[in-house]
Image (tube, rainbow, N blue to C red):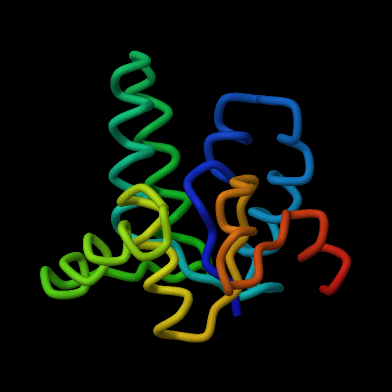
Length: 136
């Protein structure tokens, strides 16, 4: 199982360099061909970034797609879990959002799907969308 990082969605939503692989992965998640999780923190981060970019309509479409996705499940964290993530920032050298994703991966035995190479310095497995697509 996988945890999908914020940058995977943003890569596709903002039509960046690796958006095609991200689109392919997100379509497989939408159809239920692959199962993965997304943190509520990641969703909120994306909402804020799109809203600040004056892309309110895109926020609506994004949230509908997340809601309708058969293979993507939302993972909410508790205040205590977020406190553990804060403590992990010192241990891992990650910033809060990465430490929260690290905590989720470690707690649930998930692999991180991300372009963020900071995860490579940790003991969790980081994959890029193309790696996940090859396995499916």
